[in-house]
Length: 91
Image (cartoon, rainbow, N blue to C red; front, side):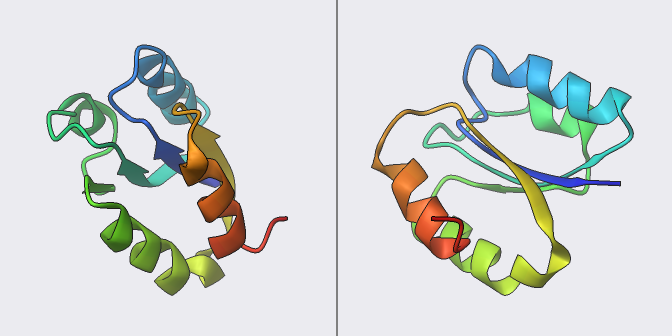
């Protein structure tokens, strides 16, 4: 099982990615979006964490770095992608 994190979970394409993660028997560890109304995540992953404050999301990623976050979907093309690359040391 692979662990996933999604940035931009309220985006138009996000539900398709959530469905694909679920169908392939993988796990969504956490999701982040500035919008607080992302109920679609509960449909697929009841135990995943959701954050709408970036600093809390960043702390969660740092704390859980050892759990091998394999994939990071970014649905928001902003500076957030660069910051996440720094946090996860993938630059």
